[in-house]
Image 1 (tube, rainbow, N blue to C red):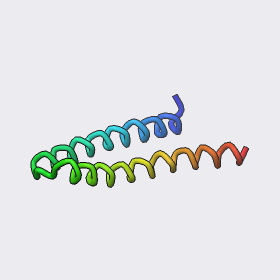
Image 2 (cartoon, rainbow, N blue to C red):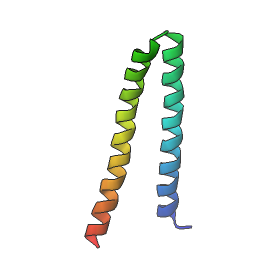
Image 3 (cartoon, rainbow, N blue to C red):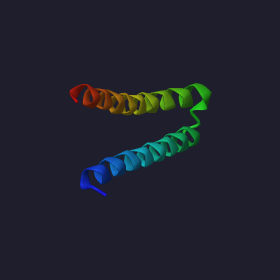
Image 4 (cartoon, helix red, strand yellow):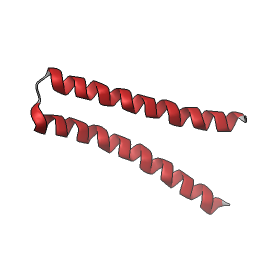
Length: 69
């Protein structure tokens, strides 16, 4: 396996694991602080926007690589 392919794969896998861990942290925070439904929704919405930015960035970079060839 080429180093570049390995790095790309590990970046995706490890960032995905980090996102899942952050979701667990937010869920635990909402539960311990008794945020309720609305507060929990706001917490997960903020996390979701960060995840959405990561996903959009991945698609934009893939699109630019296709145009470049």
